[in-house]
Length: 442
Image 1 (cartoon, rainbow, N blue to C red):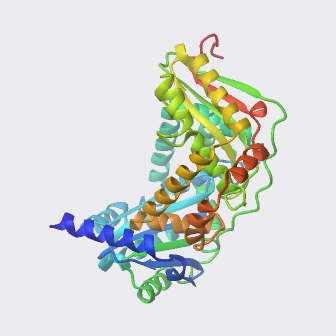
Image 2 (cartoon, rainbow, N blue to C red):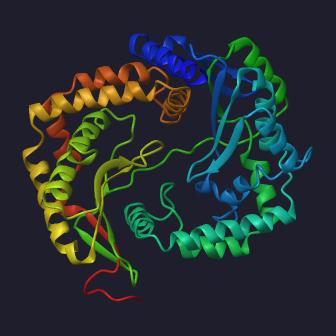
Image 3 (cartoon, rainbow, N blue to C red):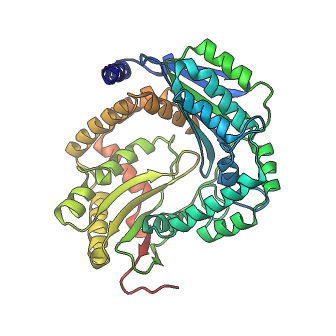
């Protein structure tokens, strides 16, 4: 019976997002310095919470790029008021979940609970963000854990290709440029607990903290709980303006040789010159989706299904939430089929770039994009995620209502002109990572 109740609740939310405007029903207000967005849905008893604040790796201080992530790893390792076991027991006793994650730009908060347990979860979010224990014992464990995760990643051809591509695209000092694995491992080894404490004191605060609540949540009561939990919290930082990336004048190839691998991962692309909020972003996204986003896209249908050259291939725009991002094709080939796979991929890329997309392709893709977007809003997780992304990207909750209309308004002429304006196959960077035929290790 419970499964049917959840199913009907989900269907009720889906029906509401398909027929109603979202932005007018978002209650947005500053509470204790936080930017709080609340959306009450027809789903009973469940509340999803998502939050973010600028304290990612790009905010590293004292020259140690590992400190932000090490700080994030300590958030759920106990507070100055209770140890991690007590926190875990409180969450488990009510079936709630709460986790933190650190990326290049943001620390993210993800939680889900029953509506009756919302005060508990809000209180724990505030306590763990504001008063982490930051103990020496857990700090040493975090260093070992973080270094181990990087060492494991070094064995992944996908990771090595994506890492090399990002550092080839973004110049030194750019917020989207990650530290190399070697730099990060050295930084982890030299990081001190005092650095982590100083970072937390400076970067954790309400200055640009966004908190979204979606589900069976009453706005007035939720704001009261937030105000109480975060009362007196000050400080924090805001996201700085991100400068243009620039483009390369000529094509370039970088080989990352990894011995004894059964596959070679490639990334081919360039700086897009676009932020997510730019007018050309939606048409280029539509064009990119036609080229390589799913089973009906050109690259998948041709390079993978018809020619049988790849395990997987896709194209996408990326890293454009806070500044100009990049455009890329990513694929995986066996070493024996690498050259043939690259030739096919680049041939289809050039055909797409020169001839553009057809009216029929665009019509089908528009229906697909609008449908997928609306379905993504049909759960509390999906809707909360879309709301917080709209704030982070600077487009606001109104975007959730505007996006389908912008997609529907696209024309082949508009889409094809944007492809040529922002992309040039002759100036793209190609990264290959794996056991590359003819290459040798350094």
